[in-house]
Amino acid sequence: MLSIGDLSKRTGVKVPTIRYYEQMGLLAAAERSEGNQRRYERHDLERLAFIRHARDLGLDISAIRELIALSEHPHQPCGNADRIAADHLRSVRDKIGKLKKLEQELERIVSHCDGDHAIEDCYVIRSLSDHGLCDHEH
Amino acid sequence: MLSIGDLSKRTGVKVPTIRYYEQMGLLAAAERSEGNQRRYERHDLERLAFIRHARDLGLDISAIRELIALSEHPHQPCGNADRIAADHLRSVRDKIGKLKKLEQELERIVSHCDGDHAIEDCYVIRSLSDHGLCDHEH
DNA sequence: TTAGATATCTCCAGAGACTATAGATTTGGA
DNA sequence: TCCAAATCTATAGTCTCTGGAGATATCTAA
Image 1 (spheres, each protein chain N blue to C red):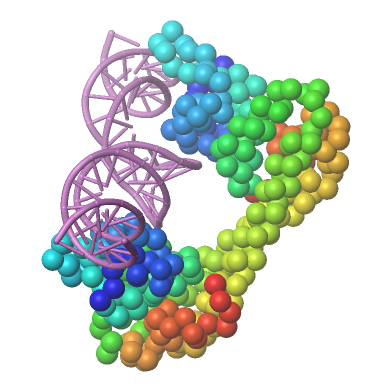
Image 2 (image 1 turned 120 degrees about the horizontal axis):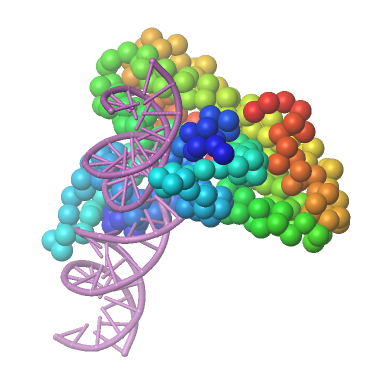
C-alpha cells in the first residue's frame, strides 16, 4: 500500500495534482487508512502512469477520460482510441506549423536588432506596431 | 471616435477581451461618452493592434506590459526589447522541439493501430499504459 | 418624436489544469 | 512517547480570456 506521497514520487505527479485527478474522475476514489489517508495499490500506480503519459503527450483531461472508459471495455473494437490519438496527432502537427511561422518571424525580428540603438528605431518594437513588416499574415 | 465594438471589428479582438486588457493595464482607461460608454481614438487602435500582434506571437501579458513600458521611453537603448523577443524565440524553439518528439511518438502509436481490433490489443492504449514502449524518454 | 433593435455598461462565474494556503489530523521514526 | 513530516479538507488563486444577467445607452426607421 502506497501513500499519496509515495505515488507522487514514483510517477512524478504532484500530490495536489493526484487529488485533482481523483476529483476529476480520472482516478477512482482511493481506499483510506484508519486515519482517513489515501492508500494506493499497484493498479492505481499504473493508472496514474497512464494519465501522466497521456498528459505528457498533450491529451486533455476529457480525452484521457474517454481513453480510460474505452480501456475498461477491452473487448470492443479500438476504433475510437485510434481516432482520439489520430485527432491529437493532427492538432500537434497543426501547432508545430504555427510555431514554425512564429519562429521565422521572431528570428527575423531579433536578427534585425543589435540591442544597441534607441527604442524608437528598434525593429522589435516596430515589428509589433506595424503588422505590414511581417512576411506572412497570421 | 470609435466605440468598443468598432475597435473590436477593426482589430479582431473581442469586446470583453478589450475590457480585460484595460483592466490588466495594457490599454489606458478609455475616454467615455456622456452615457459612460468607451470611446477610442486612432492611437488606441494602434496600441491594441500592437497587443494583438504580440499575443499572436505568443508573448504573455507581462512581457507585453514590459514592451509597452519600453516603447514609452523611445530614447532609451532597446536592449531589453531585444532580450524579451530573443527569450521568446528560445522558448518557441523549445516548444517546437518537444512537439516534434510528440509527433513522432503519436505517429508511431497511430501507425500501429488499424482501428479494427479489440481494445485489449490496441497499441494506442498499450502505449499509454506502458512507457517502456516509447522510443525516447519524456 | 418615438418605438424598437442593437450595443454597451458592470459585475460575476466559469473554463482548464493545476498550485498554494490555512488549520486540523495522522503517521513514522528516534 | 514525542515531534517532525506527511496528509487531510476546503478554499482561493493562477492565466487569459469568455459568457451571461440585468440595466442603460445609442442608433435607425417610421
